[in-house]
Length: 426
Image (cartoon, rainbow, N blue to C red; front, side):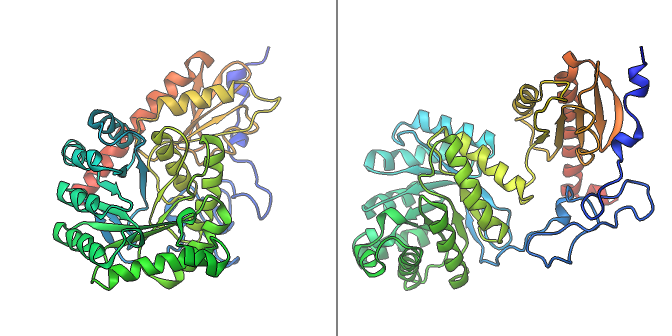
């Protein structure tokens, strides 16, 4: 019987010669790194002679927008795209709402919104605000008095439609309260609640009608000297949403809050959101986003980060890549991938982990992963950055991967802390 541990894997597994014009050259080979990789939003001849796993070499040209603040979170002006979600608890139930916000924060949510449909909800805001750490947005419709109560309670942003507050005097009061308390306003326009005269003029909730509604609301705020504004333009379908944002992005420089409203269940809504938001983000449009799902709000945050990570706009958390199943696999890739994602969900470090079924789709295709495993005939091979580091029994794969990733995460955290303190420059 052959000595598998000595013969099964060779250097050729790691550095196969790529197809000309498609793959990267092998390491340490003449002309290594010369193949050019296309970069989004660039001319075809432009590119970078390095693996696109380096996020600094995969830069999307983002739309220039003014910057506003939602508490300590900067939105627009080149700041990282902020991830938001909305509680589905009754806001007057303080314990349930705070508990959900704490779970959202652990998942990575950076701004949270709560519904304020009545005075009971408004009266709960101050206590909710006192007990949470991330910025709090109050979602207000129709009753301007609720917006005044929310501002007084110390929320960090008001989500309103100035047009449905009903009256210039009431808009004046809301804007004055926002100014007095130093909070921002999100103008939220939904295709399902456009003004009747716009529906009549455009023959329905067209992208142009959505944009005009937004511009009218913005004008109400600008008339009162208020510019700490972000804008959302949402429809339940991708095409209208994308076109509305494209038009608005050309007309104003306010930061844009992205979302596909009422997108659907966890599965269908995630796909619809990924397509719509992915189109806009790849064009540089968008400063903050919410993935609206009929699911646990924590799922919204998870999906949002996956969308951002896929475009390398945010690098928070572990990125698990896995090969598709086929008849060659030597390990249960599906099961192991899900287990690894769950076990590593607590890690914030931007580490790429590869779970590959065999040597064909193994270290060679996953050479850019920080760490990975490939199934073999008897045992699995662990590798780091394409370099083999050892063999592991199948029963010990998850334990070993988790341990090594946690070590890498600790090293990343230490290096980040040094960068922030400036001690790393000595």
